[in-house]
Image (tube, rainbow, N blue to C red):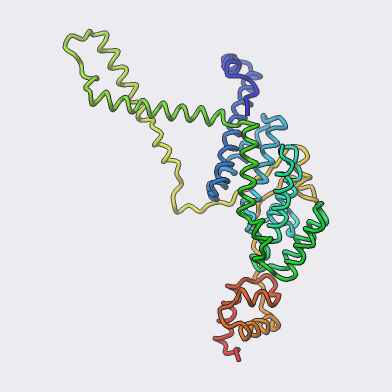
Length: 371
């Protein structure tokens, strides 16, 4: 993103004592910081660094609360961050971004994506990501063994989004037949979704550069590294030694130079390790409380939430009913012990996974309830 005012004007206003000028400078600096965090978030998304993504999102969230940030472009970038957060947690079905617990992360991402159409120049790219979000919202549920959630997701999309009828029929058939690894789902995989979104981010950043502060920091690091190299060379060549015929004035200048270089070395970029959290610290789950200042509060929830939140909620443990035990026994009798994925496809175990089936089978074995 190009700064709203150039560097010269920032310098001029910073030299004045007026509060209006200081507010102006603060707004520009805050905008640069938000841009820097935006680029960092995109990079964490690209590299799949989940913990760093959450930490960066938390910082960006705090910056985005600043009242000095005004403009559609800032709101737009905050929206994109909210979208990336939902995709990043797309496979965590127990994470909620909205009050309606039926709306899973990728479904919420689809709602925001529909509002970002004007940020995509390639219409086919927009439609492709829309389709991928729909397919993966269903595929992730099937992958987790939650067929009922897959049916609910498909129904939600039918009620809230427009998409080709043949696509809905195709997905409905796959859900009915519980074909978790259907070739159609494989062609619209989650990894394909991430790669396509990365293409969108690359195009967006090219059109809306947000790297002013990033470039400035890079120059500073490179400059610091060059100074350290020169210091090492000077020490090896004995250039800091004092010649016999050197004047007093020259000697004082050289002593001052050595002092300055020593101070710069004390502020080496290696000090950044000080900010590294202890390995025993528990990673906090972060949220993007504000997606935008105007219409986004209505976009993310039908109940007009003031601030969409990421709340990590767990469903209460489900009890095994006699009917489910009966399904499990039939499945083991038909396919054999250990074939849990096949057994899941034969019966509706109400969202349970293969691991849960295995654990239940052990319980039945110990209780001698297996005939």
